Length: 112
Image 1: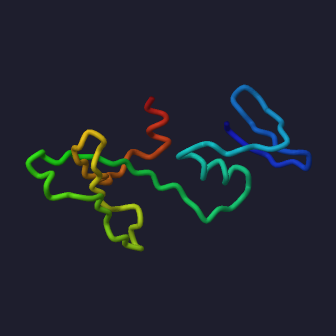
Image 2 (image 1 turned 90 degrees about the vertical axis):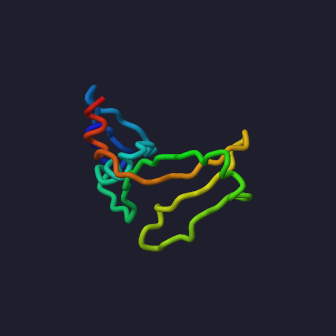
Image 3 (image 1 turned 180 degrees about the horizontal axis):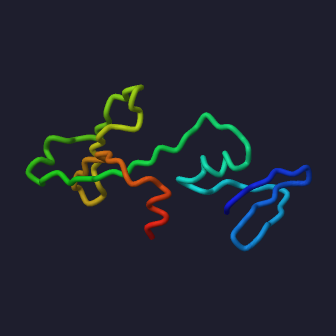
């Protein structure tokens, strides 16, 4: 999709294959959903800030250190950061997600 126009009778989605008219559109654009919202002319307080995470596995001789799920205390300044310890179905423990900043969404999309 390269553009979006709101009309009295619905919306016109501009695509590389031409326009498509519909009564309504549902924004399911994932990491690009904030951009699609802006294309529509709407304003949103939400902004997508993508980051990926690395998961690690505890060594079996350290499993005894965790008996229950462990969650970090939230920090209002960084609500998306924090390491969780989770017991997996097979009994092993994972520690994650250690956040790391990915390439910008557009760079990632154009690299594939």
